[in-house]
Image (cartoon, rainbow, N blue to C red; front, side, top):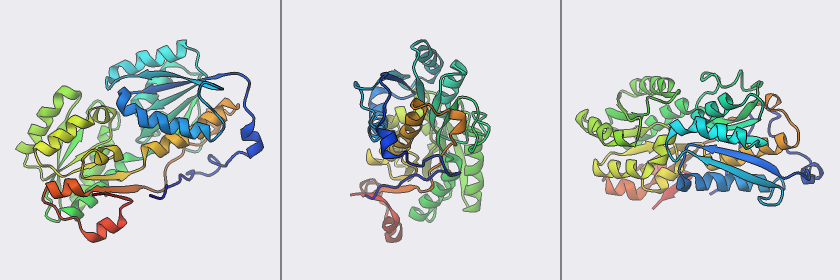
Length: 327
């Protein structure tokens, strides 16, 4: 599959440093804090992508940098404590995954640079002043997930032309739930569909949430981006299989593991791009001077095995547009 490259939203954020400059590395061993809401297993591909991105700038783990890892294992309530731990560890920069992680890091320190990797609007969420001039000690990469949700509904409609009711799985504790749901409801109305919201604040709520979807006679499911859902992706896939719900996800890994449809920015590519920010900050740049990036191209992945198990025929026109087809 051809790799999709990121382009800066406002220009200037991703201009490559000259090779001679990039080859220069400080003699100090940098300490990079990684604050993640995920489990060790779910975090592994993100960390690998970050390492790969850093290596392109000459940063080699164990030689000129080390990681300080703080993983919440799906328990978002731990993020504040873990962020405080990174501050006490006196790291040089914090790479914070998820909007909740970015908030936890920002609340923990006004001085240590923070590179966020989130799905959501950081301006509406109050994390930054603007994409071009984020201000403060936080910058990074973001994908506006609420806009992508409308496209996911359109794609589900292509596979299921008679689709009338779509369940939307949300975590009401997420700061972006309201705009996500609002955009989804507006998009569904334009497509002649209804949205049925199902809530899950923690893993113990998932069975009840799926029960409500069935009671509402949902024809399909869209899982909104949320760290808790990523951390419990296996259980969600088990439930979509049990209830035979064609499902759209915001993470490619969910479709590779058995879900039907993915549309969005690659999280792995977002973490590779985050390495650009870490590199510049470690070389003296200030987060306030580094515009926040958004991906300008997105990927579509379809799992034909999942479609076959659900008795669905995916249109050839849709398959021809997919970046990845799992057979």
